[in-house]
Image (cartoon, rainbow, N blue to C red):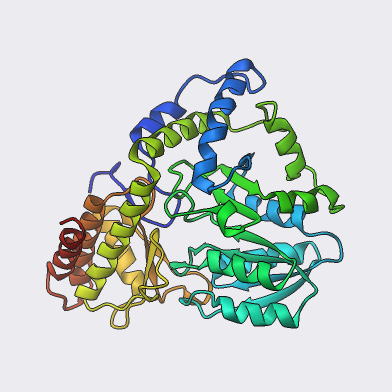
Length: 384
């Protein structure tokens, strides 16, 4: 293996396009100068279609988790009760954030690998009319599940006055997202997943309904106060020092997404997940999620006749291929493949072929080529 040759196929951070890397290497500029104002002015309108909103998308220098905490401290007022739907490790993160602020939290657990049932949430809301905010994840990275947030938002609004807050960190930019049309009140994503940037930016948009709550909220906050970001963005500025190099890269990312077209971006991700799932079906290796619940950005595999960590180790040692392991109670039980952002069907074929060799080397009696052939057939079936 070449020492500098690495294949990063975890569910974030994801690979960065060369043109984005070049954009980020531009000379530094003053963050309060006209050049940065012009940069933000160009970026602002291009983020809106990705979120599916007419609202401004606010840019905060911080990780995706800072975006989740931002959503909590801006929408939950002192004394409010909230519902958090936990479908994996990142739903659980919302719980930890709320607990840190002493918020009264209703936790609704869904089996890892399964998606939210909006009908079950409807029943819970009717039984708990005191709930003011419902938190959920769009793509649950830890399990490879894409939750039906459109149906969830509809159920919440029909059966309560609660706000709907969605963590879209590992899928916004890769899957259809219509924040306004679906009735999502706050939507969060991060830079290092489908947005094809390094970690360091989080993006937050809020509905008019949410803004009314945010403006009246007495919950203390400083750096994560959305009102500051909104008021500054109107002036093409930020309240605190932005990650200027990442903004250079973001402008190029938005150009790439615009050139490809969002519908084609979404179709590419759907194709890659179908190829990946077909490959493991062809290898007779179980998947964690159903086809219906599967995310287009990450696939979770749950082997029964070999150790996931043994495979991950040999892939990294022999080929420099990094795939992710399981989290929390699924550590060692599953492995996860990221196929989002700067990734194509050609990359999927490469990944599957390497995994087949890895399986052979750890003693798994697969037939070489069976997974690759299944992925090839899935590609051809969907492209003729």
